[in-house]
Image (cartoon, rainbow, N blue to C red; front, top):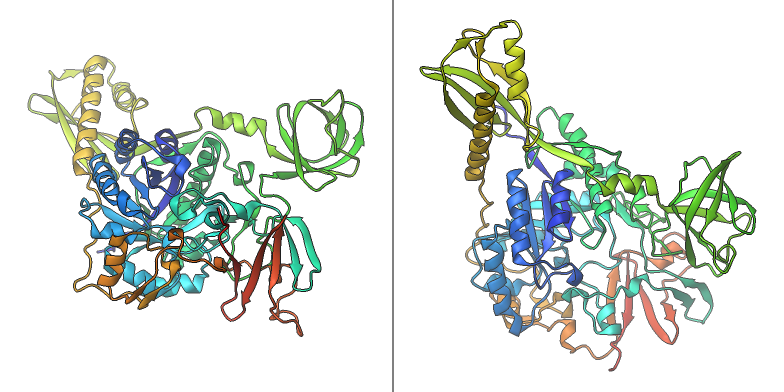
Length: 623
């Protein structure tokens, strides 16, 4: 017998239940959402009732709901977190996304555990340990290459997840303490102040300025469209889109884009791969990821190091290049472009100081080779900084966004219908793509149709009226001995009863994925000592690591024990490489420290060339 297809999962972000429902409508096989507390996006929390509403909708399509419970916890928060985990399970969620290992020492419900990105999974040893500890799925570090992913996949049976789109944290996830050191807001507590998006000066040890006022720790956004097949071959099975704080247009657009790309791979795989949920999507727009929020695109280190990973000019959404300004008047300007512009479009440009500025187009008029644009005026004139030769960009395409403001997708589950005969009338069978089937009888006298030639078409037309349901007729079989007449009212009632029965059967057939049992005796942790980088913030986390053989366990950075200068961030992003100062690329250059400067604030950059990493070193500000 042929092997069952390997399931590929598209995992989309849900700021709230409504966003999650639209992500599912646009093709997500699973969504991840924050609960009332302890999520790594503090501004994206949701009531348990909303999680239940989302789970009820998702499960109709066989899609999963994963709930982020992925901050590190204080001792006084452990009981609250345990109670919340049970409430989330009772609400119908399918998995908890976890960073704090202290949770595994608690009396948790029988729900799957997924290792959060903050677990910083970069090695086969770490991945295997987490699988042995009871994690069914884990998201790997975004910095990994295809070879590194392949090596991890060879050592664990857990489902491997990888970010394929969205914002990139410049630090290894879970290993950044810059926000806490500078503001008291901990990224590992869901409160990152994003100091990595601020402008900095870069100087060498002699005080020579190498760059001034640039966003040197700000990265372009992750974009793995062209690497999906390679990631699948390397062992990735869940493809994650970042963005629990992004708007609905982003969620719809990006989810639809990756749904199409994964479907194309699945359809061409000769049955090797399959969708992990039910239903097929029809989109009422053409997905274009560049049209919604992004900082430019990079595939980061999936295919090795390359230069264009930084978004140094601005951490904001600059947008697609429109063209150069050719003429400037008092209330308008002309831009040369091949794009189609429209009223309401949002444009950006860099002003004389190099800062990103923006404007909204009130009126766009075609002129030879482009457009004459009339923006909202400031003090009776154009916004400052618009000059002939300036390049303008578009970060808000009004026509595109309007398509996404209304219904933009429809997801239906293909079903096969069969109308047959019984001793006292008829029966209708509905079967879905997963093999769930129901049969509903109709007691009705068999009467010959007055128009035998048209009768079969009339029956098919009536049976196929599934527009108000989540189903679509893939085939309709009439297993009848004669062209019988069945009143439309009776056939409608039969169809509705069959749909209700199929809904109930599918709900009954749904099974939440089981919890992976932890290995016994406990598998030793790969290291016998943990520094503050282990993020041990409570007594239960300490007990977990001690139970797994760790002998030296330092408290988390947030405990305040690190008084001097320490690495506040470790990153594969290297400013020496970005500025052609890499000793591996240029002979005679030494990897001496550099300085990041923001006002009176100074951070030291140290370079580990053997690991090809940069450390951002500093100390906590005194309060």
